[in-house]
Length: 126
Image 1 (cartoon, rainbow, N blue to C red):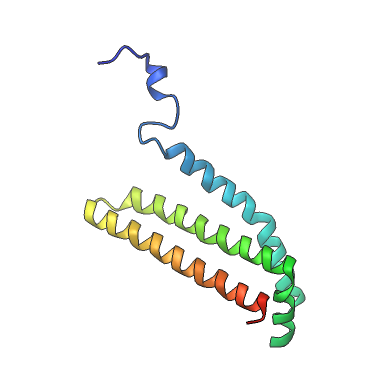
Image 2 (cartoon, helix red, strand yellow):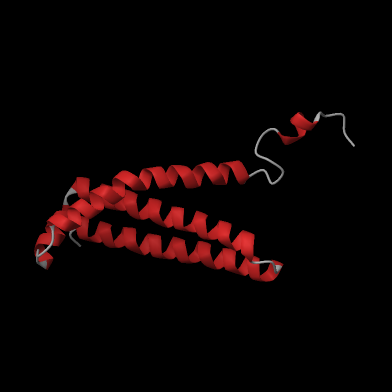
């Protein structure tokens, strides 16, 4: 037993040293996704009936490409954070939990990277 008060023992990020950070990251990504999602839905609505070349031209714009990359990166990071919480709460086997967490991280990283590379390829015109 240490000499620290109960308040001193719980200050900071909690016993796991990451819960508060995870909570705030999840909330911040959710807040960032609000305007990005509104922009995306409005843009897709305006592109209704457009052909392939018009969509490529739209996505080739620097502002559009940056917004799309921000949305994709934020979406996959938010997805990873959310699924991680579900796995930590409901998967009780240590091996299954570790495997699922690794799988989700890999899945979100690979799909996010592939999506961002696809946007960059269209933006650069390659």
